[in-house]
Length: 193
Image (cartoon, rainbow, N blue to C red; front, side):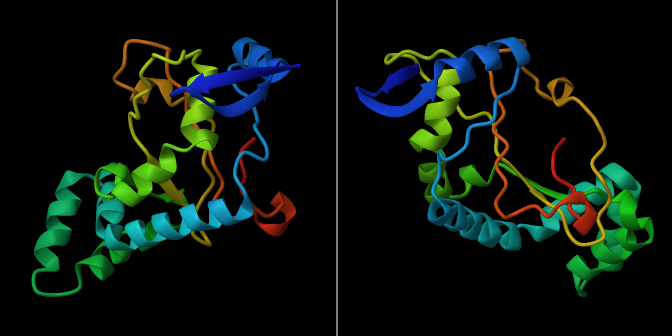
């Protein structure tokens, strides 16, 4: 049994009714096969390039969150005329596994190339279907977030993202998409539970 979404007058995704009911009941669903391995690698390549261009922003965010605004100001002052990236990394290094990942936000605002990939049926189409959007409804992208887990980064503890969304509605979905294979826990992987 399948439910067909018509979005912009064309079929963009077919989802099993069982998955839609499971999403409604449980609040989450795993959708497999929506993107080819080539499409995932292509998206990962675009995001890797954008992350490299914005690495200082990701490091600044971690210094601000984990060490405080004063430490970030000190890092800027200490790195005047020197390697700012290295100074930020030096300040985070003593924290070791307390740094769970680096994070970048809203790369779609800087990159029409990324935005076009996020508007695909496999991503926007599934989100629209899960939200019950009809052919005339408008789907909006709130933000993208890239999480970069480096070797030695700590675990990401149980948490809820809802408190971080400044929206007075539950009418949004989060798509979590691994951009590379995640090793098993016994091999050092820290996938989602």
